[in-house]
Length: 353
Image 1 (cartoon, rainbow, N blue to C red):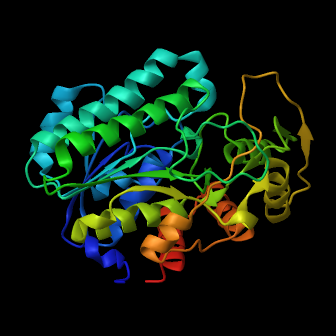
Image 2 (cartoon, rainbow, N blue to C red; image 1 turned 30 degrees about the vertical axis):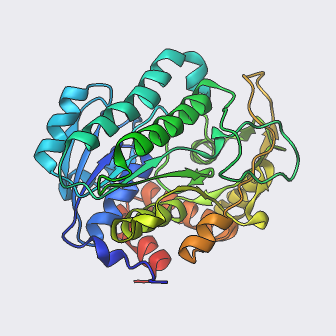
């Protein structure tokens, strides 16, 4: 099978929704590095500080600030960009926030997907679309050592997870109803828990570690025995780019794909924090302090055999590699270093080109 080459994107017009977020900013930097003409559509950066601003991503792309719920503004962005490839990352992505704002979460994650696919349906020239959802879309009964496969029931528990299950179903319906014979290849990607430099979100374990390290405080770990498929941010971004590029050229490759580490890459959160402390140093330690927050699954693992067999793909960095890169980025930022150079160094190391 033909191997994915990121230089495929040279000269391609690409639209990225959610480009001001953590993953979106990294994706834009990678796409630009390999020659794509990138337009981003998103709300203002969701945190302060944020990677989009720190790395000056705006200077590399056409950045449109808009709400994914505003279909008129979104259609205008499509008309101006005329994309060939679309990555849909715009979302309300925090589980705990979804308990506080369930209606907003559903409006953004479900109707945002509807709006995007309506734009794809009515815009000429699009060849490839990837909707990024989550590993939490599955009906999860906390069965130990059960890796979820793509053909298992979708029924996320909390409003975030459930809204992403709905986003998957919306995509399936549009694909069958409108895109089967349209010349547009459509896939979804269900990625595991993503970590990396430049994530400043609330209620995520690596940003919590970084904030505590900077303040020289104990790291509070709410659920140290929860198992998650942790992976460096470049792992899923490489997979997203691979899927979108290869289905662009061969529509038979479109589908629904899990993206995550192998079994040995699924770790308890406490071990993840231990690894962060090992690389960061400075006498850090963590304490187990559950805050009585809302339900979160205790166990989550993905079966990635479909992605492997379809694209001859395999994960590249283990937990130590991932945490080492997180700490390198964090210390570069703390020391006032060149963040763009730091990001490019990581991208070159991971992509091998």
